[in-house]
Every structure is written in structure tokens, then in C-alpha cells.
Image (cartoon, rainbow over all chains, first blue to last red; front, side):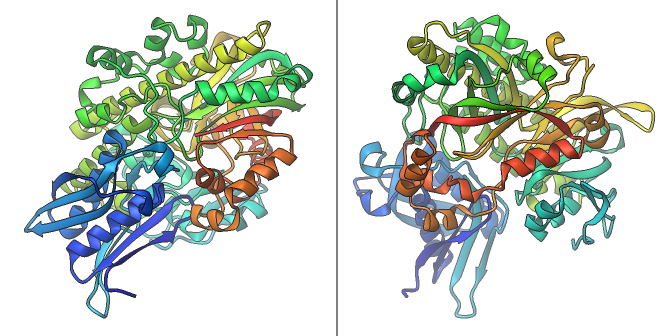
Length: 140
Length: 476
């Protein structure tokens, strides 16, 4: 398995998203893919346009929480779906370029809508191998 | 916090004795099977709720309780503002004022049968649903402001339904004290072209048949006749409510730290009811409540018009509209004293007993209709609020079946096509926007709703009036 990947984990009512990478930036970018994959098959999303996201937070966890909630806002208010993310973090600020396209219902076949990221299981940690792991449960 | 084990104190009530920081005990309304099904984390969450400032009597879990955020789903907590009581945005939930509305039709099972497929197709076509469809209404800034201030009353003024509906909605469809100025531009934007839409996930519109009557007198008062078709809608405040909750939970994490409130779980983030953050949240939450009831008012109108286009003789009349994610200021009697309390009901329904002044006059003798929505393809129930329930649970009862299987597991186990075939074999017309969404809502992913309704009734929280079988199910 590569050093950067995402997965979903179980929660009885909802679903957990997890991004892993050698640095927080990659872990966050992977978690963004995990979020998008709840709603659509990532392979159906073409990389045509990008949207910029900026958030700030006092620590990595809050930064991650705000980042995921901002993505949910991007998807649900603008109908923008993405299959790639370029994340940069400096100090308390995060900037991300989300690369994808406007949602096309027939092609993307969106299933459930994600309502919000929660603080449940919210954590940004490091594995014994030194990889960053960003996770939380989202309400669907 | 590690809670004590639940101890059976009566046939349908288990108690968590106070440990650590718990200010009051936890009470779980369940029988042996249901309590076995509840994960330990539910008890931990209930103990956490019991540790919040100003909580009164007990932190409670309804028979359908399962793991939630901060509060368990199916959680009830009453807080006294004068004793530092708090309001928790997480304790209300992300889908503010999500709820259920049922309309009577006067059309029989036999009549429905002949036009079932046509009606299912038309409902699917006419009711905006699913993720990203953006087929709902777009409101001008002015209309948005009015909708947030007036709720279902605004919708009726716009021609959706009629005034008689309002009486059969909690708060008569318009929460007093709603403060639209506390609803951010982002929250408003998330509602863009989504007003009057079902959403996705476990939200639905069903045509159901009254299949059994348990309390003929109450059923008569409610207008429920065996073998009649009813329309039931389950949905909430859409993206607007989700955004209000997201923003205030974030604010309350900071407020809790400022107020030095110990938070065993950040999803329990809260603010004293009498603080500025607490008051601001209540104003925003009430505006989101108005959004939810206005949303159901519009959907009910569309469903009604569709139903009437197929059955011109139908007499569509509203039974009731209940919310199950709220915090309400209510008067309750504690140890012989009337107190003003704020009752959080997270995945729990208000269930006022007979004689309650807030009930519409027509229902005052029998108690409030409590609508328990089943999962897709299973029964739903109408119960009635009781005097016992007023004492046991601040007039609260369960809201649905409660999940027992994660979406991920359900998806793996029940492919969408298989779910549809299984429902078709039961003669249920299903229309959905997503196979994946349908699989995640497979009936097996939920608790046995018959059991949940029975225990709610046996424990005295509310009494069973009628059972409803699904005939048409339109999923978001």
C-alpha cells in the first residue's frame, strides 16, 4: 500500500472518513477523497476545474474539522465535486485547491448527502511508522 | 467517563447510577432485547449528558436509542436555566427539527391498489428529492427572511396548503422567538433551490395503509380508519439546518472552554441557556425549525396535489406534524413544583399527554399524536401521548426504529437491487434516486420497529393507536 491513501471506517449510524499520508497535507487531501467517495464514485469525476478553500484553526484537529466542513459546504451549496486535492498548511492557515467539476447527476449518481463533520473520533495523529492519520465521523 | 452497568428498576426501565461527574442518573426505556442491542457507547453517552450543568431529574434514552454525537440518538435531557442549565447544539442534532408529518386521505386500500404504480411514479416525479438535484424552490432574500421568521405560516401564505394545517403542527408551525439574523449567509446558501425538497439518507415520502387499530377511541379522534391510505413525510431543515448546527457547535466548543464547562465529548459542546451564545443559538435553531416545518408544508402540498390528481375524491387532512431534533422551552411539574425547563429531544419525539394546553383542541382529550417512522419497507406507528409519559420522560417518546447496522455494513450485505426486489415481493412500490442510498437503508439495518413501538407503549411513554404498512415508498 502506498504511503498516502484513504478509507472509510464503521460507525453504527453514520460513516467514518480517514486520510493517511507522510505529512498532514497529504492526510487531509486523502480524507477529502474519503469524504467525496461517500457520495460519488471518484472515478466518474473529471478534473476540469478547481475551487479554492481557505480555513484557519488553532490546531491541526480544528483545521481538519473546519476543512471537512468547508468541503461539505462546497459540495452541497455549489454542487461542486472533486477527485483531487492539493493542500498546503502554514501556521494556523490551510489552503486547498479542489480539482473536479460541477455535479452531473446522471454521470456522478450521487447517493447520500453528508450533513456535517462531527467531533466524534476526530483526531489527527501519527502512526508508529510516522504517517499522519486524519479521521472523523461525518453525519449522513 | 465509564458508566455503571444499567440496572433494571422496573419491567421497562433501566437505570445508570450516577458515577464520576454525573449530576443525575441515566434512565433507559427498554426491554431485555432492546437493552442487549444497545452498544456500551450509548450508556457512556447518556452518562456524559447526565454530567452537563443544570440537568434535571435524569438523562434519558428512548427504546430506539443508538449511538449518536454527544447525545445518543433517542436521547432526552431537561435543563433548568436558573441553575446554570445549558443548551447544546449537538444535543439538538445536525438536522434541526427533522420530523414526520402524516396526512389522512380517506382513500381505501382497494382504491389505492388500482392506481398504485401511477401514483408512485407521479410522486417520484413531483417531489424534489435526492442529492444535488437542486429542483426545489429558490427564495429571494426577502422571502427567505419571512420563511425563517414565520415557518409553515409563510408557506401557507404562499399558497402551499391551507390554514387548517397549521393547527396540527407543533408550535402551530411557527416558532416564537425565531431570529433569522442568526442564520448565516452560508446556511441560507445551502438552502438555495432546495426549499421543498426531501433530501436523502433516511428521509422519505410514503403512502401507507392503516393495517391495525389498537385504540379505537383515539383512532377515531385522529381520523384513522382501518384499511385507509395515509401520506407520511420524513425530512428536515435541509442544508440550512445542517450549517446552523455546524457553525454553532464550533462556537459552543469555544464557549464551553470560556465558561469552564467540563466536556467529556466535544460533540456535547454547549452554552448556558442564559448566555449570549445560548440565546443566539436558540434564535437560530427556531429559525431552522421554521425552515423544517415550512419545508414539510410545501412537500405535503405537492404530495396532496399529486394524490388528488389521481384520486379527485380524496379528503386530504393533516393528522399531525412532529419534530424529533429539537430543544424546547416547556413547563413541567417536578416534585409538585411547575418549572420552566428546556427539553432537548435528539431523535426523540414530543409526546404530550391529554389535557396539555399546547395541544390542538381536537386532540386535547386523547393526547398528542406521536408518529414513529419505520425504516424502509417496515411498519410505522401512530401513538398517543399519555399522562404517565409526562411524568416519566418530560412527555417524550421514541422517533423511529434506530439503526443497528452501519451504512458500510448494509451496503456490503444488501445490494440496492436486492433491496428493491425484496420490497417488491412485499408489494411495496419503491422509487429511489440512488441504488447505493437504498442499500444503506435496507430494513435489516434497523431495529425491529414493532418491538420499539411495543416497548414505548408498555413502558407508558405513549400508547399505541394504529399501525401503518408501507404501500409506496419514495426515497431521497
